Length: 258
Image (cartoon, rainbow, N blue to C red; front, side, top):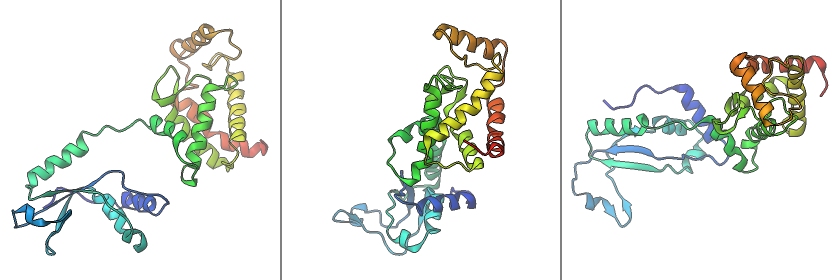
C-alpha cells in the first residue's frame, strides 16, 4: 500500500559495497513517515529527543535502496552507522506520493565531466586513486601542446573541444585496465597514450582535427573547423576515438614495451 516500487537487487549490492568501504556515509536524508494516534505532538518530545511508541511502523518515502543496502552490510557497520532522516508525522498517502515526486522528479543530474573535475580536490586515498590519475591524464591531454588531443577535450563538459571529459576518462579507464598498466606511474600512462594517438595524428593528418606545429590559434582552429564541420571527420567523434582507444590494449600487449 506504500508508494515505493520493487527493489533492484543490483542497486542494493552496489550500495552495500560502497558502505563497506572506508569513509562511507549517506550524503542526504532518508525520508520517512509515521502514523501515531496521539495528536498532541508536544507530548512526544522528552527534552531535545523525539520519543515514539514501540508499536509503530515507519513508511519509507525516499531511501529504500539505501536502507536495504545498509541492511545488507556487516553487523558492525550497521551498529555504528548514523542515518540522517526527515520524519513526517501523520501525513496522507497522497502527500507522501507528492513528496516522493518532488524529491525524485525535480532533480537534475550533475554532468559527469564536472564530477571528474572535482577529483583534483579529493584526499589522497586509495578510494580516489584511480579516478584522480585518470582526471590528471585527461587534463594533461587537453593542455599539453605535445598532445594529439590538445584543446579538444571539453573539460567540465563545455568548450570548443570535440570530445567530452567524461567520455575520455571512461575510455582511458578501459584502456589501462585491459592493457594491465599500473596506475602508480601517471607520467608513463600519459606518455603511452600520447605516442599511441600521435601515430594516428601523423598518418591521418587531413582527418585529425588537432594540427601539429600550428603557427597560431587562428590556423589551429581553422584546421579543426574544416576537419570537423566541413570534412566531417569521425576520428575524434565518440565512435571514431572510441574504436581507436579500444584497439590500444591489443597493440600495447603485442609490442610489449612502453
